[in-house]
Image (cartoon, rainbow, N blue to C red; front, side):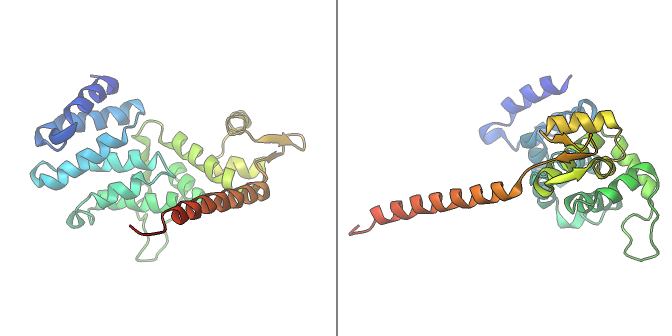
Length: 238
């Protein structure tokens, strides 16, 4: 069955009191696998299967948990990865396979795209530090490349980070943050995120963050004033 078919069936099956029926585990796992193969995502389904694994330890499947964690990394900067980690019992967190994903997540959450692309391209050199997270970096690349669309998802995540971080960015730097993207891909992503090409295409204007900050401050004052008025209207005897 396709992801869409599984998704439709499951949303009916996990409604209401039947949500955490252990009989749903097999179909949920199949849906997670379909997400991996078809580059799809459903937050409700991935969090539901993790909760079912918590409630039914005998049905726990580490390979599915790893796939869930990888899918939640693909929707950064959302909080889904953090939520997923909270739904895994602490006695399972020390697994080597899961630790690789957690360490990869730490790299992406800290926006260390340089390390991520080195891992993907096989150029990462592990340190001699006993706490080195990627002692076998090729294993991380193998895990990621088994997930359809993962690297593209990271590129989109990088673009979102750039959108809130840079006012102007050189094309050469942008290309490096996107894993060595060629000119065509850089231009396509710049267009998608609304960045303006300037200086003969060597620089992109991303956003004027001074204006954004001022607007945000004004919005906060308006909201606060509105709340103050509501509180004032509630004063008096109850």
